[in-house]
Image 1 (cartoon, rainbow, N blue to C red):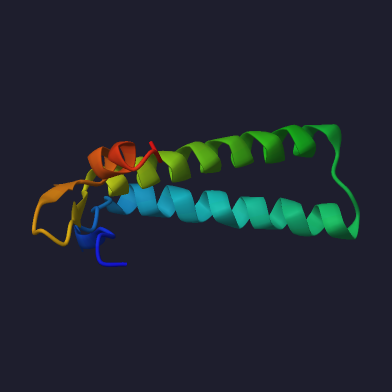
Image 2 (image 1 turned 90 degrees about the vertical axis):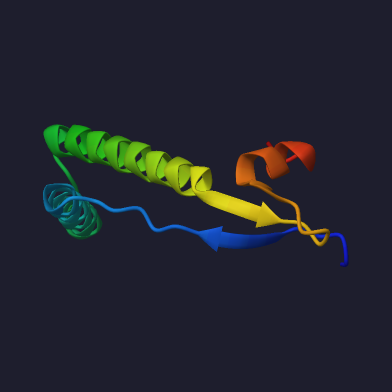
Length: 94
């Protein structure tokens, strides 16, 4: 495993308070709908709401993951440091 790259550093992303609250509320509502679906089922309107919330949540997750990877560097054993996406492309993963 001598030639395997190592993730060197990862800077945390900052979110403002309103984004955190909105995401927390979205997750709370997703969980409420999931519980109701298990216990008694959902109306057509609730099913549409659930689908839309899942879609928004996944889009948010993917966006945050993309930003996180944009701020991640890989250090190779020879000391060379490259952005994660460049290393992934080089290794056939991107």
